[in-house]
Length: 425
Image (tube, rainbow, N blue to C red; front, side, top):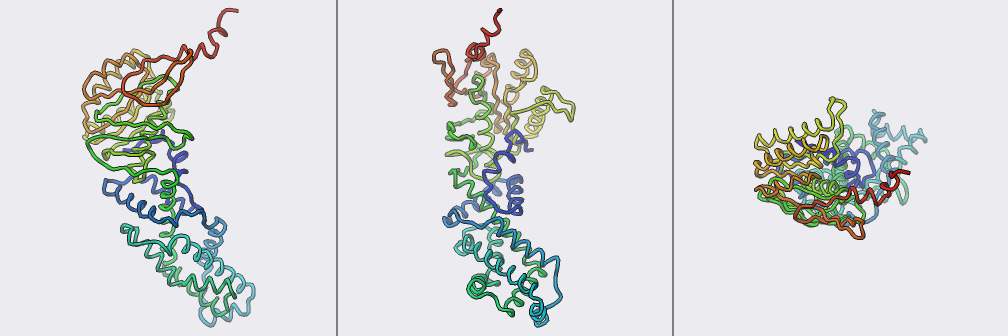
């Protein structure tokens, strides 16, 4: 079970890995970043693909093809596919000889085709060390190389550029491309090319901000100097926990939700086989990942905010009882009910979750009376620092051990002058 809607992954995180110039590669990118590998071995296989790409410095120079260039070539090939032609050999040459418009269109399309293929070969494939890639990714690269070689892209690009293609050359190359399409080789090339570009784009999203690959170990959850990649000037934090339950406290606006999103994002990216925004990350392989931060009423199912919280928690607990290893985040759990109910069921929840060794549950709370439960085994307490200077809050956004009972509601209320505005005239 994976519930990461509250990470806003598609809208906010996926674009950080998108350096693509065509929608076909972008579709593969979205597929890779939404399909969770089923095992640690599959995760490491994905890491190996990305690590192999990152070995090639030439891939990351600020030069690429344009969207217009790709669209022209792809449209030319698709038009040939839909149009088709029974003419071959001498008959095709005769047809092109007596139809200047067809000849000019074909030679222009071939020039764009060979220019584009020559360019991507120089940008990507001519210096690629295929043997460092894992199979089956290596097979796709081999197919690409074979196509580029059989088409002799360097030779015919040079001819088209320097003197232009002769009539026999135009006819022969047009016929060759038609054969490649009829035999399905062109479709295989595009599929392998789009797949390569999607993974290359992910590797660039890793290289540019300097993300690091995690490792998997069942004994603990360790994330060093992690941060949220959307923050311009992020504060980095370190977390090391072995207890099933971690309680996080801190006043409003101290950064609890952002901290929880950062932790959840590291765990989710790690399970996708990607690098993470942290200096170091060691974590178990989780069967269940659930991030509940911005829960609202579920009007479709007729659930109030509180009932949505209950259902989210229930789904995780059911999985945990089935001996699945769970990672779950609950931000301000049970804020949808009154404080007495929230306190009672929060204490019951926290105590109950401590039974699931090997799973990790992160719960942020404003219920200061829960501090007593932190004395139990299986519970780790930490807080986000905030100082008061001259009656004004100074947020540090730094995570530290312990419990925060700092209450800023009245401080901020007075700071904004509401006590005076609401006083009797």
